[in-house]
Length: 202
Image (cartoon, rainbow, N blue to C red):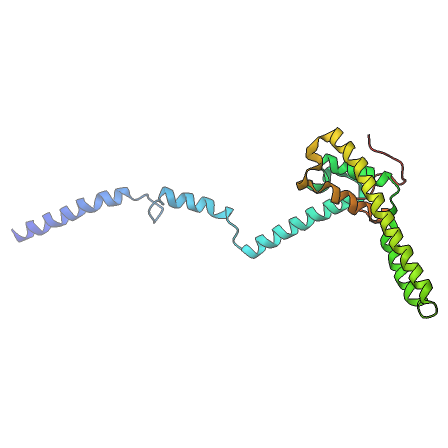
């Protein structure tokens, strides 16, 4: 009787173990991964393993973009300039200022030379140094008047062509025009599209 009980017990154990063995895929040696684990494994390569390398790559890409934009401003390639320089009325402002002979174009070099000259001359003739400074102030006044007249004419043309949005306060179009007019033509960025004055925008 004891022998029969032992054999029955072993048979029951074999029958209970057989479903587990049947559920195991032959040859794998490990259970099938769950769907969530499989999805995580498939998404893992999309996340950069090294964040420093990713940031370095982003900086390199941004530097390349800046180099392309700077080169475009050097060559006059409007399509590849920064977004702020591709605004239609800013292009018009640049062409208008570049076509015009502005009194303020040589303001900074003249003031610099006048200051040095006045310091040198003052040792021998303070009156001559004073006269020289008066000439500089007169020139400054002429530059301001010239810039105001330039902006009044340019503003009318911008409103007629692009509407009031072109001269709105947020656009700073006036400051953009004045700043460009005070720069030496060869040093302006973006570079003038024409080598000589007189090529007025349509």
